[in-house]
Image 1 (cartoon, one colour):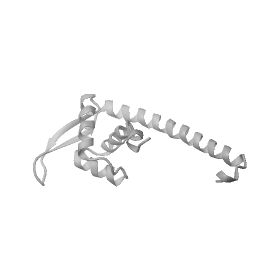
Image 2: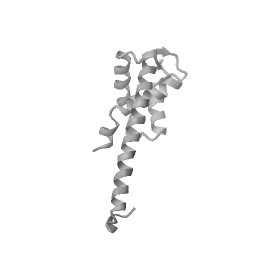
Image 3: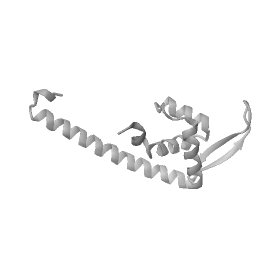
Image 4: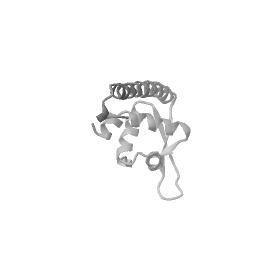
Length: 120
């Protein structure tokens, strides 16, 4: 399974989390994701997600003057977006816990079998 497939849906939650703390424009959002280690996403990937989120009323946008060129579209979270972020965090915590349980249990099973070819 590719990283891109695994990240489908997770990126939405990460974007909502970043926007919650401060309104951001697309390039700034791409830069923040890059700083968090998401190296395979560009503005070209992010803008369609932002457009969909705007249609779903999770975010709003405002055009503001820029000191470096044309006006920029800044995105901020709506109350609906905040609720969606809370749901995402709950789902993420459950998923992370469940995956960790499976991986840990399966590692322990292999280790406890005494299979010397698969030692921890």
